Every structure is written in C-alpha cells, then in structure tokens.
Amino acid sequence: GTKTRRPITLHMKYNSTCVEPHCFLIMEGAVETEVTLEELQEYIESENRRLEAEHDKFWAKEIVVRIEYKYCPNLTIIDTPGLISAAPGRRNSSQQQAQRQVEALVRSKMEQREYIVLCLEDTADWGNATTRKFVMQVDPNLERTVIVSTKLDTRIPQFARGADVELFLHPPARLLESTILGGSPFYTSVPSGRVGISKDAVFRSNDHFREAVASREASDVAQLEKKVGRKLDAGSERSRVGVSQLRRFLEQLLQQKYFENVPSIVPLLEREHRGAAQKLDDTVAELSNLQEDRLKKRGRHFREKFIAKIHTLVQGSISASPERFGETLADEHIRGGAFLDVDGQPLPHYANLANKHMRLYGGAQYHRAMAEFRHVVGQMQCSEISREEIVNSCGVDDVHDGVNYTRTACVIAISKAKEVFEPYLYQLGFRMAHIARRMLPIGMHLLQRDGEFLNGHDLFLKKVGSIYYSFIEECEKDCIQKCLDDLKSTTRYVTWSLHNKNRAGLRSVFREQVVGGSGPAVGVASEESKKDGGRKKKSGNSSSGSDASSSDEDLGTSPQEQ
Image (cartoon, rainbow, N blue to C red; front, side):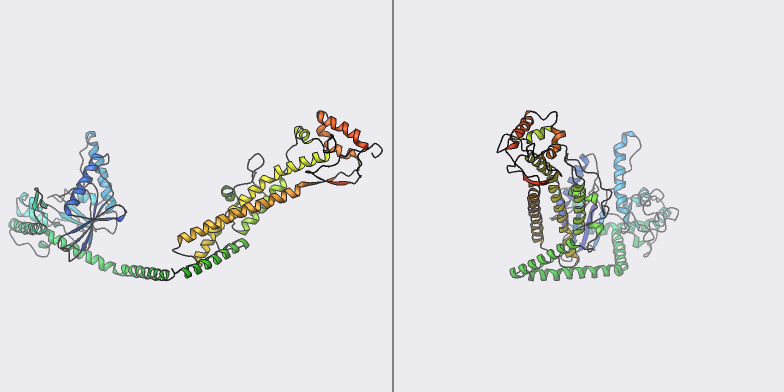
C-alpha cells in the first residue's frame, strides 16, 4: 500500500533459510545496507516527501532493493509510479507536467525488449482501459504484456447479471486483444492494510497476511460462481482468479524464458568461467612472483625490454600504428611548439619541407624536425645594425685612445650571431624533448602487445615513466649547453677576407654606417689613427684573424704603405 515517486527495483532471491524476508537497500557505490520492512517503507516515504517538495515531482533514478525470502522465486520486479490522468486547463498545468513525467518514466522501462510488462487495470469495462492503451504504445499486440484486473472484490457487486460477469471473464476480441501474453487476463484481490506492529497495521505478521490473501481469493471464487450460477472451469477460468494463480503463471513463464535462453546463456557462462579461471591463474602466478629476488629480476628484464623498444623506435619502426601514434608537422607544432622569429612570431609553413603531412614518430619524426631546423637556420637573416650600436661598439683601445675597427666589427658580428641563432637552439631542444617524450606511450603499447608488459605493477610503471621524463629533461639541458658552447667557440673568432691589403679596404666596410653621423668618438678615433699610423706596422695579408675578447692592433698604415 505504499506509493512511490521513484521506480523500485526488487531483486527477489529464493533462500530456503529465510523464514522472514531479509531486505537489503543498495545505495550509491553498490553499498548494501540491511533494513527491515518498516525501515524500507520509511525510506520510500521520505523520498516521496522530498520529491513532492521539489519542482520535479518524480525521479527516474531507481530505488534498488534485494530481498531474500523462502516464499519467492528468483525474479526481478520493477514497480513504477502509477499513471496520472490530469484534467485539461491551465489551472491543472502542474498535474499535466507530472503526467508527462510519469509517462516518460514508465515508457523508458517498457521499451526494454527483454522485460515482461504487468499491466494493472482498475476497471470493470474492458472497452475503457486507459492503462492498456498506454502500454500498447510500446507493445501494440500485447505479446509481452500480462493484463491483470485488480480489486476484483469491489467489481463483483457491480455486476447485476451473470451475463455481465461472463462478458467480464471472457472479453471478446473487439474489447480485448486476443494476442495478450497468457491468452486472457487475470483477476486479483488483495486485502487492504499493512503488516507490522504499529497502531495502523492490520496484519501482525506475514503469515497472517498470506492467510488473508488466500481467504480473499476463495471468497472471490465463491462470489463469481454465485453470480454465474455454476462452477468455474478449472482450466480457463479458475486458473485466472487469484494472486496465487498469477504467481504460478509468472513462475512458469519465468522458467520457460529461462529454458529458451539456455542455449545463449551457456556459452556466456563458459566464457565467464574461462575468464575467471585465467584471472585466478594470473593471480596465483603473481603471488608466487612477489618475492624480492623475483621482483628485481622482472624489473631488470622489463627495463631491458623497454630500452630495446625505445632503441627500435629511434632507429625506425613500423610496429606502431601511425594513425594512433603519429603526428603531422601541424600537430607537432601545436603540441611541441613551432619555431619563432626574433619578434616571437611563428614562422610561416614550409611548402617544400618533406613529409610535413605524414604522421611520424620516433627517429623519422626526429629527422623531419632537424630538416625543419636546417631550413629555418638557412633562411634566417641578421637584423639591421643601427648607428647607435656601431658607435657604442667603438670603444677605447688598450694601447692607444684610437678605435680598433677590427675589434668593433668582431663585437658586432658575435653579438648579432648570438642574438639571432641562440633562441633557435632552445626551441630545437624543446621540440626534440617532445619527440622523445612521445616514445614512452608507444614503447609501453609495444610491450603490452608483445606480452612483455608488467600488469599489476602500476607504481613501478609510473616510476619508470617519471625516470624516463627526468632523463629526457637532463639530456635536453646537456645538449643545449653543448650547443651553446659550440656556438660560442664558433663565433669567438672572426676571419676577414678583404681582398685588398690596405687600410681603405677595411674602412670601406664601415663607410656607409659612419659617414655623416658617426659622432665625435669616431672622428677622434680617425684622427688618432692618422697620427699613430707611422708608429704601428701591420703586414698586408689578404686575411687576418681577430679575437673579440683580446686587444687587436689598429689597421692604421703610413701613406708610403698605402
């Protein structure tokens, strides 16, 4: 007699030792809590009160209950909220909304093809059956629907003649579909009242309630036989009256469905058995391998296999799927960073770069990144040298107060080379680290595919990944530092090839920059170089080397040497 605003799923399980029902309420996270029938009823009513106070009066989330009992078959019953017939009009909009909610909730349950629908009709006229019409929206022929006429004890007094009872017990096809499950409807009566020890309880025990149900069934049969003036036929009539007859039919139907599904259930059970047996064997083997020496041996073996997979990926391999693990150049730019110019702007795409649309990984992706780097370096240009930079580089020489133009040129060349080239080294290092990091999941995939993966050792595998990433970071830093050392050693010395052996050759290099605005420092330096030209001698070789960090001689020469 408890109504509900949520579906209630009852997992009935036969247990010969349970003389009284043992109820378990299944909460969030599949946590089972044993409750009494009174506590279960109180929980359902509290949910009803909560939902009644909310805007949505009903909730599709099921209340799941498992019941073990001596007098029940192995069966799952889903009790849905009762259908609502709301009156038309704006004043009844809330009831109309509740009606739509309930209908959507019930329909979602009936649409499950493996479910049997138990349609409870509260009517004495089969031509006016609202519940059956709603069920026929999902099951048009009622082939998986059992029709049950409830409250038979209140229907019998409404029939004035025996012919009306005969029409009710044997409805023609024009009133009730002949294709319903079971061939004809069932007729039941349940005595009203609750079971318990509370003041409003009518039945003090479950046995008392079962006796009342059996008594009501016998009373209904006697009243029907009195109305029709004959004994009910045992096959077509008596087997349809009473809760016990409905239960017997559902148990037989359940057994029939079980036998029909045995051919498909047995292979599933065998497959589950094989899977469980394999897991058990793996667990036993895993427990035997938990000794310290064996764990160390397996760890060393996995390390060697992992390093071998990474080595294979670096050398080149087609073992992994490019569709899953490969990256195009555009993807690589998004995840690993693109090369940026001196202003921090991404460089345009390279039309002539090979394999830019191919999904690569490992060594092939490394070669493509290096090709892109060479392309970027080959196309880069030195930024313009301002007059302020030239003047600031013209300092005072160690020997005299003139300007050492050779050193000035070296300072400008070294500074500009470092400014333009050095950022690309850091960008290349980050790109290569991205390519190397991507090989970790690919290597793990290959190990798992080849049956060399360590299952059940998640902490060890996380540690391997952490060590691998730390190794990549250290390699990135070391490589960048070595490249910076090479850059410094390469740009420390500047070699000039002037193709003429006099002072005018070097001066012509700076003439366009210093003429007309070089400032007093350059003018003084020029005059001093003329004064000191006779004191310093320099050979007239066509090329000379200069160290930017050391003191160089001025290229001043005497008029006779010119």
